[in-house]
Length: 371
Image 1 (cartoon, rainbow, N blue to C red):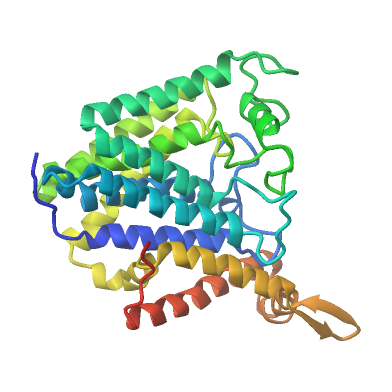
Image 2: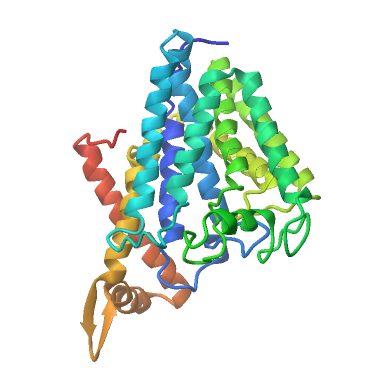
């Protein structure tokens, strides 16, 4: 295996930025009237929106290998590398845990899981596996995580529905969330959490699939070889995901094994396309806005939530009524120029544009959030 870290891949930065921009887009519609791909699947199945989070976790894994593998091979203290990994994970977890509900923090009902919390947990556990195993061990970890998950979801006699139930009303993951974190789950469901405890197992494998892709990129230095193996890997994982979906459905809320495989395969294929266009084709400059978004990915995600809160909690008078700034802008700007479904999309694009201006200002000043 090559021991030199390859030159920085602009395609990975562009992919990261496009993923964050997509996350902002799908999280901030103007109304509940939206195009189907911009919504999560109701339960089983998947949409464009359901690709965003696993793509980001996969990118985390690729970046981990490219930034850390050479340091491990040089014999740097694994304890220090582990401490850095733990500190970074702790900061990300606390950012999600505390800034999510801020300023209205209610310790009795505060949500313990969450998007950033899952990123932190997956980053930490995958990082430990990466630091103390080689490729074979990482493959074994992927298999073990998903086999354990599969057995728990299909064999454990879940109270109220028995073994193997995967309905939204009754499944093993929901049962464990209710047992361990009652009252501390997503407000949209209250009785189960889409970033819950059990479904974190296959989510960790999403990062590990990215780690394996990082090894692939280090192993092959030629662009043609990299592109070929990215495509082969992606196609194989997509095929495996669809094959296993015969027995277990694609489900983002449960992060099922077929879903994890499918998303890792699609991430590999999408990254291959970006690699072909940006690094091989030399067209990276045309996608500079995505690259800028990607330089402060976590910060942009946090700011998007803060901006959404500002728009929804700032009240203004509109005639005889008091409405949110979100409602006023949607009604008087977006609906003034488009029908409801396109007005909702226009509002979401406005969020992306505003956050890009912030990202661009930070980029110009070379201010990058580091943990």
